[in-house]
Every structure is written in structure tokens, then in C-alpha cells.
Image (cartoon, rainbow, N blue to C red; front, side, top):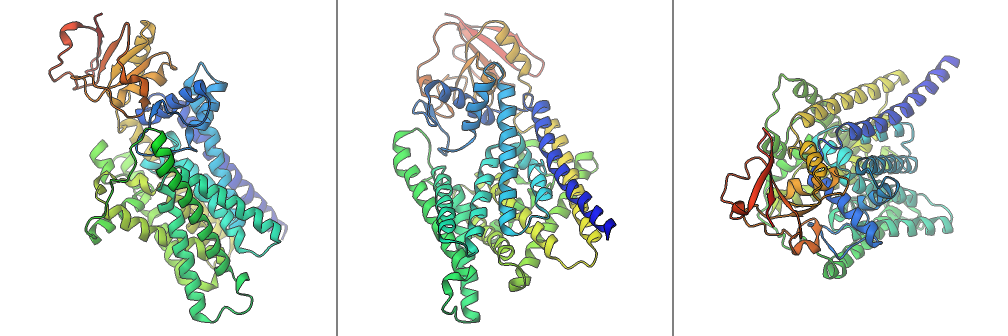
Length: 527
């Protein structure tokens, strides 16, 4: 007996060590690759944060946003990072991303405590911090964009499952108020989480309530039934998120510059398209290629280290499918919170699968759109692993160990591949350092170079983003609105490889002052 207790203590401690190691690995990746693999999407959040620190507030009317106006996103943590490290934007990014990763892990632990999944909580939270696939590494561990959405998902679910259990009226009211606020804040960020969580959650809860009603009448204590309480919580979250989205769409859209998604429309229902986007979802978990990634970075050779390690992603995707199928099959034999996880994940696959496959801009939708659903998939695997009947505890530990090993394999493969073939090049550190040393403070470049130069020079060089180098026409996208006027004084134009293979009307009034073997060229514009 003493040996069993000792083994249990060691296993519990191992879970927390795994979680800490996953967090440290993410920070180490940011330290090692945070500058060399930086792209302009990532850097734009830091440039915006610097502007917000100068102006105060969380939004700016002096900034061109992209397709979403996200009120509560990374820029708030980047603001803090720049206040702590004003002279090193890389250190500011590391601090912000470390805090965001800790917030994500904490949100999973909060959810797991409420859902009765505490035994596996540190293991699952650690897995959620790992770069277990291309999109998780790109827009999660390095970019951080979707870590914010994942945190909203887990915080909302953690509050919703707590509302399922009958407790005091005061506690229920406080939990409901917290859920309303979190859902409203998520809605202020745009329509994304309505699709990725709140609508599927309401649909899943409605199905559970219907199945319970078909089994037997609810009875006099109907208000205490978990199905009723869960449906009420889901409706509350959905309504508050919709209210936030309507404010985003009607009020904020009129006050701030961004391209909303109102142009999207339905196209023909395509079963083939639905299967394709479900394939993108399964490819999240380490499979070494999806449709977008192959087009952007090329095919991954099978008999290469990233290719062989990425094959473990097939096993992880299989674990998600088997866990979901088992949870749905068990039905009422499971705790209600575990059933809710499985049903919500299934509803997400249906709702988002149809939406992603049947919208008119389906070609622009890639696997990253599924990232907010990844915590549900991990929670489903955790729920199945905890509840599956195994006679010996050692078998359950072995299963968890195997899953952790698979996560390590796919994370290593994804990192090696990303470092070797980043989707948007990188390699701007040398030219950024040279420009800063030469005293330049203003310049032109196309999107994938512009904001990167500003961050790599710690804000010393302000970049005007242009539609194309031939026209030097300002592009209203992820830059200051003041850039509608061209830069004054000494300025340069940075041309990326291949961009000088066109007619440049201003070339006669410019001088080549730097170039490299990759094909980058810096022109100084003559006054």
C-alpha cells in the first residue's frame, strides 16, 4: 500500500514537472526563434502596443486594423512588456508570451477542476502549451494570437460546468455574472468564438436536454437537472457573446478602421469540403502538412526527421477521434461534465465544419481557424483517459506517458520544419541591424517586411507599408493611419527577393545602398 501511495505521489509530481517543462520550452523557443522567425502579423501587434502606450487606452483610432477588431488580445500584454522593457522589444515579447502561456495553462486548470478532470489536468495543460503542430507553433507558441481565444474558451467552459452543479444562490449568481462578462468580452473580439464555442455549446446542451426529456419527464425538480442548468448557462453565454459581437459590428466598426467580415456569404453545401476541413482539424495535432502549409512551405519529405516525427500526429489525431467516439457512446454512464465535453466537441465539428466549408471565401480558411477547438479535443482525450475502465493504475499512467511522448515527437518535428522553412521567410535581422546602424528612422516596404523591421530595431525605424513597390501606395492594413502621408526627410525602400523584377518609376531618384545574396535590396530615396 505504501508503495502504491508513493508511486501515486511521484506520478502527480511528474505531471506538474511536465507542465513546467512545457512552459519553459515555449519561453526557450521564443528566446531562440522569436527574432529570426518573426513575421509581420506578429510584429504588428507589438507596433500597435507601442502606439497604445503612447496614446493610452486599449484601442486606437489612429491604427488600421485587419479583418477583426480584437479588444482583448495580445496588445494588452505587449503594452505591459514594453513598459517593463522599453529598450528591448524581444524581451517585451518574451515576457508577454510567457504570461499568456501561463494564463492559458491556468485557464485549463480552472476548467479541469470544475469538470472533474483534475487527475490529468497538468498533463493536458502542458500538452496545450506545446508546439504540437504547425499552426499551434505558428499562431500559438510563437504568435500567441490563438492562445487568447483558447483562454476565453476554457474560462467560459470552466464557468459553465460550475453552473451545472446546484450550489448557493449567491455563488450561482456570481458564477453566472462572471460567465456573462467573459462571454461578452469574447464577443467584443468578433464573431470567432460564437462559432468556435458558444453556438456549438448551446446546440450540444439543447441536444442533451432533448435526450433527457425523451427518456422521462423532468419532474418537479426540473430546474436542478444538469441538462437544464447547462442549457441555461449556454444560452446566457451565447446571448452575452452575441451582444458583444453586435457592439463590435455596429458601434466599434463605425469608430475604428478595420475590414469586417460582413462580405462573407453561403455557397453550395459541399460534403467533400466538410471532409477537407475536418482533415484540417485532425492535421492540427502534428500531421506534417495540411493544404495551406504545403502550398506555403512545400511538402515535408517522408524520410526526414520532421517527416518521421510528424507521423506521430496520425496517432494523436486517432486518439482524438477514438476519445470522442467513446465519450459519445458511453452517454449517461459518464459524469455530466465529461458528456458535455464530448457533445460540445462534436457540435463544434458540425457547426464549424459546415461554416468553414460552405462560405464564399473558403479558400482563405486554413487549419488555424480550428485552434480554439483544440482545448476541447485535448479535454476529450483527458476525459476518456480518466474514465476508460483499466484494471491497473500503471496502465493508465503508461497511456498518459505514451500520449506525452507523442506530443514531444510532433512538437519536435513541427519546430524543426518551421525553423527550416518558415512560411514568410524571416532573415531580416541583418538588414534591420544595418539600417539602424546607418541612422535611418523611416522607410517603405511591403507587408511581410515592414512591421518586422520596426520590431527588430526596437521601434527605432518607423515603416510605411505599401501595396507594391512600384506605386509606393500606402496600404490601409496593420499600420498607423498617419501613414496616409509619405515619410518626410531621409527615407529608404526595402525590396524583398523578387520585388525589384518590375518597373520602379522612382528608381531614377534612388540609390542602391545595400544588398545581400538572398536578393534583398535597400534603396535610399534622394531628396
